Length: 217
Image (tube, rainbow, N blue to C red; front, side, top):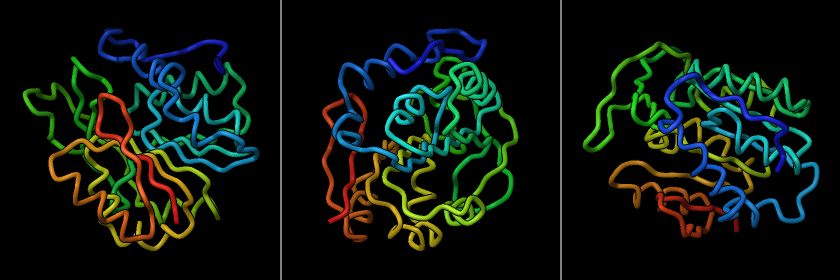
């Protein structure tokens, strides 16, 4: 395990689904095929939460950019970076979207992994909201002088539709080698085909979410 400690938001623990996330990383080994043999990679964790996936990826990378909009999760991400000495991780309190600006960010008491820019949860509801800063992916690349990216993880609770369909994404896609995207809304098939049109092939993951790995070529 790549963590000396795990800091997490001070909310109901069962709303954070931390055991399930760790199970996906270390037992189901969702990310292992991506990082097998990788050294000195560059990765971007979009929807970093408190940093569980970030902590795994950083073992294989010279640089990880971790993006998390939720104030409470970002506070925990900051603590995990500091305590675990993730010196190759840079963190950003932002929401990835299709524009630079601000947006309301909706939060759920029952599932803190489902906080979102979009009112999308079937059969559920949000109980509070905060305002967060947003960025498009091209602006993020330019501001941080990012060149080629070995791996981009996108788990951003339905906002993947905004990002993948944006002109900004089309302008940086050739810099990205491999992606993992978790889809959250009906019509995800259209987004998979959109990524295919950029020259990627895909593998649907055998997990309990709609998750694809996309590889170039």
